[in-house]
Amino acid sequence: MNCPKCRTELMVQETFEEIDIDRCPACKGLLLDSGELKALISKKMGNKADTLGFSSTSDHMDKVKAFCVSCNKDMQAMLGPGEIRIERCPDCKAIFLDQGELASLQLYTS
Image 1 (cartoon, rainbow, N blue to C red):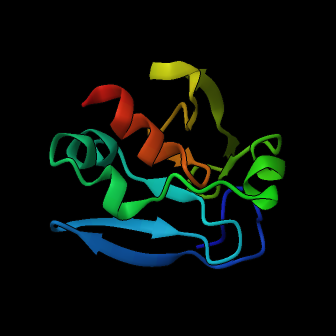
Image 2 (spheres, rainbow, N blue to C red):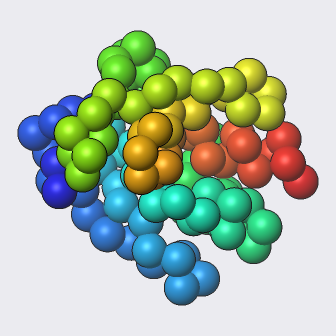
């Protein structure tokens, strides 16, 4: 599956505490299926699956609209804890987080 932001890079699957997530090797963004964000946060895995490090790439990609390749729809942006921008598919409820956003969400929910 291609990255919802880069749209050309293939996502790579990784596993944390039996939770499978998809990471873009280029922009380091994370694609989470419905329920995976809550599971990662509740298991306090946000800081292991992501880092607080931001880069010029992550800053640039934050301005790019995410696209759900499964549903063929633009994802909708919403603000989570700490004003962190979360993008979610209106149909399948998949979530895309730019590099550093999962780790930041973990800080705000711990």
